[in-house]
Image 1 (cartoon, one colour):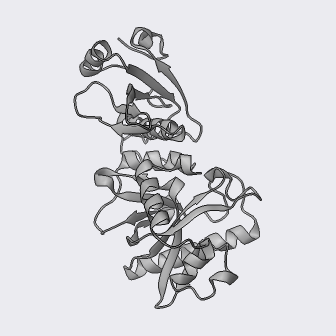
Image 2 (cartoon, helix red, strand yellow):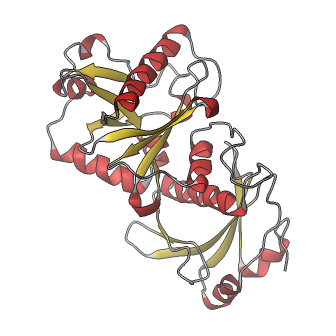
Image 3 (spheres, helix red, strand yellow):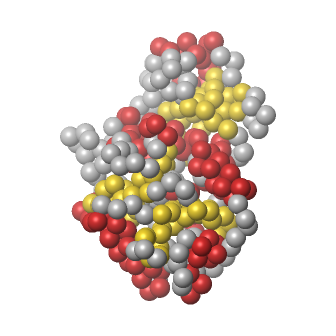
Length: 303
């Protein structure tokens, strides 16, 4: 659903959707050179004329990394749906065919063309609901490529734009949570194999931004600017509603602390709040918001 899509990604999709002729999802793929598109309306990838691979990129799964680079994690497990549960035979075959085409581009060092797609139901239900239909599908003018293919970790990394960039470990952790992909224990760089505080914070930030965006609010990340908070939450007219210091907890990160800058911000900013995301690395995180006078009540808070 559109409320699950990063605002930067949704903006590009909306601009593309409004700038061109209104085409059906099948017509878009057909115009990209897939002559048998009408015979394969439910495929996840196609081979077009000129041996060009076209693949669906689900906007709900796109992460925005450093420098505004887009990426998506691709599960190499053809038997399990991203939202959980086993695929049926047809779904499994479509997943296998898609991976075969993506692997073809990876082995050849070539890119692929993408169609950006949003769905009418929650992304986790796309393969499990009979009501699953495409909401919006547009052709992406930027080329994508498979930047990494790692069978041992059962994932590939799809990146939009020039080669030479990969998401950080923290961004991968957040992407795994967004796509409901189980952590393989190799994403975190710590010697213990557990996620670091930075990775938990990144996942918490991603969750909070998607939460507020889902209600139609805008979020601006200001982490690292010394303001004493991570996000500004704005209404549709651009007025600031909240200034949020985001904290995340997980099985490996259970304590919450405020930095000196955050303490200063909590007394200086009327709109300052602390938002704690529990189980930030799982597929089902929860959160609670605290006013400055309430932060000591947060579980795991350390003065």
